[in-house]
Length: 190
Image 1: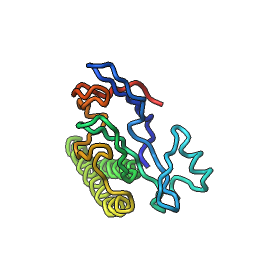
Image 2: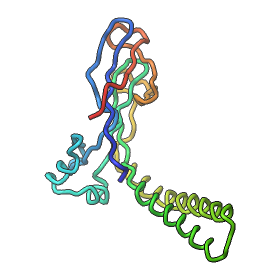
Image 3: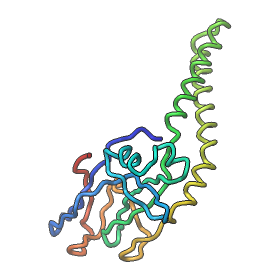
Image 4: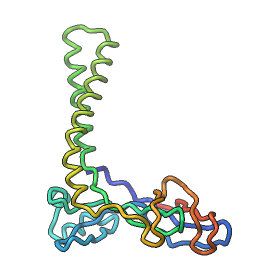
């Protein structure tokens, strides 16, 4: 599972009319119920919420019950749409595999009396090669998890497919005045 980061909170504001939206988290986790609806997990208590529902993070991942919710902004009408994607759970192992291979590169270079330049090159080569191979091995599982989630849909308000993440800092049409001066800005973290 990816190292938990503090979700960033964004709020929309129009520079033309002063309209302000409610603050929203850009990303969050959700648990799939038996009826294939999703229950958003409150941060920072995701682990407690999963435990209350009878799961650990690893169990929920193994059973394809965890999803990341990403809020996307519609550029045409300024409303938000939620998209689901599988959580990325391989970062710890990728770094362990990469660091282990780097250690092997240094170890094999020591007894042979290789110059430090060759040892460093061997270390970097092993680190990048093993890390890439491990990342590629995760792709089939990620595709399977993505197939179990709802397909991305266009904006539920206007039907547009011009949806962007808060992180892209795009200007959208203001829901209040209809002018393209509406932007989500970072207001904090949880």
